[in-house]
Image (cartoon, rainbow, N blue to C red):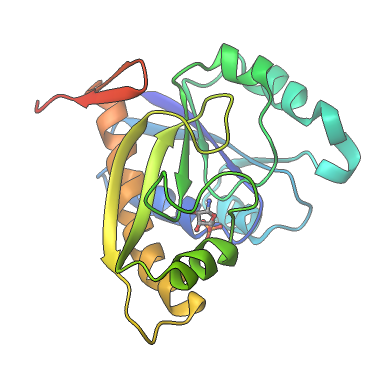
Length: 205
Ligand code: GRF
């Protein structure tokens, strides 16, 4: 079993997808051990509690700079993989080092477009529309010391229409996120993802 912790800050629709895919058997080799929020009252926590998953809140206002250390202390030796599913705090080197190539993030654009510092939430989609791209999408990647710079595991694309609002584009991409994240987790749980430098190689079986 691949033991995972899911880190969240907000609504948790991606968390919900993982919960659903574990319970319908698609993620049959994954078990969600913890959901940790950096924000008190995040709706994602309700979703986790409903599913009977252990939840912890390390509020960023309270923990500040020691947030990563606290997460490390909690998860070291207790989980195999950490999933950032709409987690907006910065992860520090100590945590990345301990979980090298074992932390994944989902980002709502086709990296390396519209990512990096300041590219989060609705801003990502505003930038894509402003730029006039015809295709956007989402990326699941490993987390390294940079912002959205780690090796890419998989990407899914959607069309961008001339009359799109950022909200409409966000919703269209979210549908794909809900497929991409479970797919990436399934591949990892089946030992099919190998990382070499900044590339991943996915084995067919
Ligand atoms: C998603 O768009 C994800 O790509 C980004 O944050 C958002 C989280 O949404 N990192 P939700 O909380 O999973 O609904």
